[in-house]
Amino acid sequence: MWRLLNGWLPFQDKLQQFGLHLPSKCSFCPSSETLQHSFVHCWMARYVWSYFQCMLGVRGAADTLIKTLQGWWILASGKSPTAVLVYLLPVLICWELWKARNQVVYENVFLRPPYICRQIVWHLNAIGAAHPFACANDDTWRRLGLLPIFKMPKLLKCIPLVWSSPQYLYSKLNVDGSSLGNPGHSGGGGLVRDYHGQVIAAFSAYYGFCTNMEVESRALLEGLLLCVSLGLVKVIVHMDSEQLLKIVQRTISAPWKLDSLVRQIHEVLSRGEFVLEHSYRETNAVADELAKQASTTHIGRGPTKPPLYQGE
Ligand SMILES: [Zn+2]
Image (cartoon, rainbow, N blue to C red; front, side, top):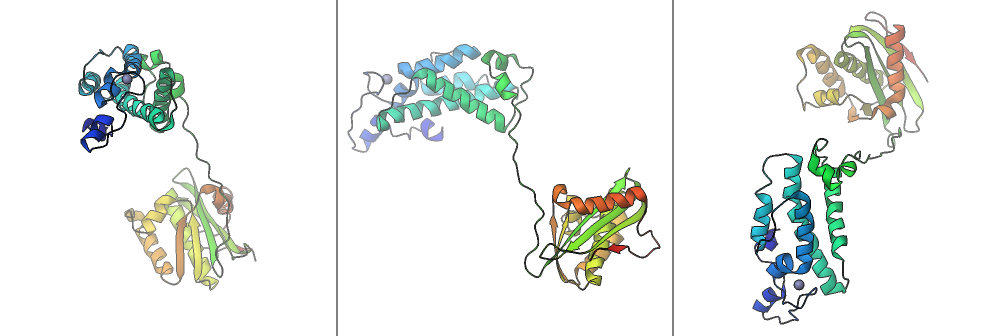
């Protein structure tokens, strides 16, 4: 649009200013080709503009491109779905007219006007799918027949989630916390596996009444201490609490209640090469189950009992 409005598109009249004399006839009619002709006066442009002007009740028949655009944009005030539509449409119309012109000039392919209109609607739908407009109650959209398409659910992005073993000589610790009620009966769970994927050790510990963040922190601390006690110094740590990860990485500050726990975590982290990463819940399922077991059965290490290590 910037190039168009500044007259920078290489139409024949523009090229002639640089001494390039090529056929100057419009590709769609016998008139000579200029920017104003191709975007406003040519029957092809008029067809496309009036198609959408009729639909939206925009007054048409302006004699220059800038006046045509003004006619649209003056109506595009506010943030209503129709305003968004009225604002976007002229841009898409210009884009498709320019493409249609180039198709015939450079590739000798003639696109029929209804096809161009469909392309414009297709663009609108693509934009709508990427940025869903709140258009549920807007009549204009319904009149345009765009509503059913715009109500289309967003495309889901699929990522395969698989637990993967750590690199050579590293171990992987998966930890998780479970609080039934937040605060409520809580437990932490975790397990350490070597780079073959073999379980080295695991824990499932009951912590009494805790909040979510408290139990996540305690489970992480417990897991880290477990690694240290096993003499593991190169450990990838996976947890599904993004918030705790940010707290430990000091991206966000810790609530005062967690301050002491977070300090202990930092102290243990300084004892080895620990790489903390966020993992999706799906790849942390075993730790999650161990934590849930502790919080529901109340079995596992209590505040005074020694840790319950399993595995090996
Ligand atoms: Zn023409």
